[in-house]
Image (tube, rainbow, N blue to C red; front, side):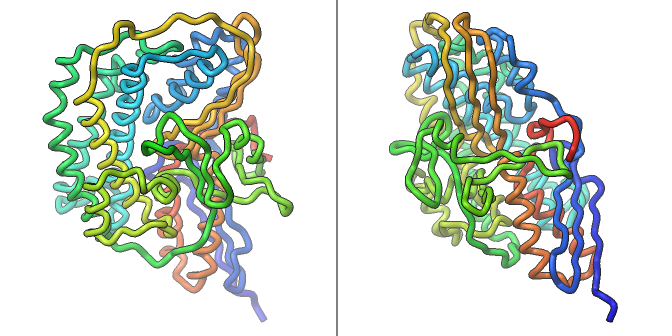
Length: 429
C-alpha cells in the first residue's frame, strides 16, 4: 500500500526578523521531519568582542539587534559591572529600568500589531485591509511613544549610546522626563483595553505542557535583575543556569539550539512573555490583574499561540512601570561612578522582549575581553519551535497542505524570532 506522505516547505518566513524557513514531512499521520531552517549568514558576535576593551562592549553589543539593542547593552554592562564590583546610583538603576521599559513598549508594539496581529485576521500584512487600519494605528502610537522615550534616555531610538560601564553617559533633566508623563499615563489606560482585544482573538486549541524559563524577582516584574526561574525546580543563580543549559548545533541551522541538560539529552524550553508571565504574574499591579481577569486571561498559559496576549499584558506593564519610574525620578549627582578594571569572569541575564538574554565575559587584568558567550532568546527557543510544530503537525496531519503551511508560519511568528541575533556558526552541519 502506498504510504501517505506530505512534504511542506516555507522557503522564506515572512514577518519575522531575519532569514529562515520551515521544512515538514508527514508520513502516515506522523511528523517524519520537522525543521526550522536558519540560513542567514553568521555574524560572529563572540568573536568580534575578543581583544576589545570592556569599555567598548556596550556599544558593540547594541549593534547586534536594531529592535532590542538595550537588552544586549544591559546584559553586557551588568556582567562587566559584576566583575568590577560596581554599584550604580539608585536613580541610575531606575533610568536603566526605564530604558528597558521603553524597549519593551516599542518591541512589543511592533510584534503585536504589525507582525503577529494580522495572522488573527487572515491578512498577509498589516496593510492588507483598511479594516485593520484602526488596530495598526493604535499599535503605531504605542511604538512611537517607546521610540521617543528611547531617544530621550539613550540619545537615539535605535542603537542608543548612553549606557556605559559605571552607569550612564548622561542623565536626563527631570523636567524633560516629566514632560512624557501625561502621554505615558494615557497610553497605559489605553493599553488596558488592548488586553481585552488580545484576549478575544481566535486562538486555536493548542495547549501542551512544557518548561518555562525566565528571571524571577521577589519585588518586581523582572527586567535587569533576579534569579533564573524554571517551572521545574527552584530558582538558580545566573551562572548556574549557564551550566544547566546545553547549546548544540543542528545541520539545518546557522543558529545554535539550546536545551535543559538531561539524561536523555537536552530538553526544549521556552523563554519570552509567556514564561515571564507564568512565573511572575504575582508582580503585576492590580489594574493589570483586573484587566486580565475581566478578559478571561488565566495563568499559566500553555498555548504558545497566546503569546500575543502575554505581550499585550507586558506592554501594559511596561507603560505602568515607566509612569511609576518617571514620577519618582530625581536627577543623580553623577550619572556614572568611577571603577578600576579588573580581570575576572561573570554571567548576567536580562529579559529582552523575546526572552532571557545571557552574556558571559572573561576579562584579563587589563579589562580586555578574553572570551565571551552570548545566548540569545531565539537560539534558546528554536528547539521549542520545532517541538511546537511537531505537536501541531501530528494533531492536524489530515489538513490540506496549504493550510498546514500557513499555520506553521503562524506558529513561528508567535515566538517573535529575531533570527539575525541568533546566527553564530559558519555553516550548517
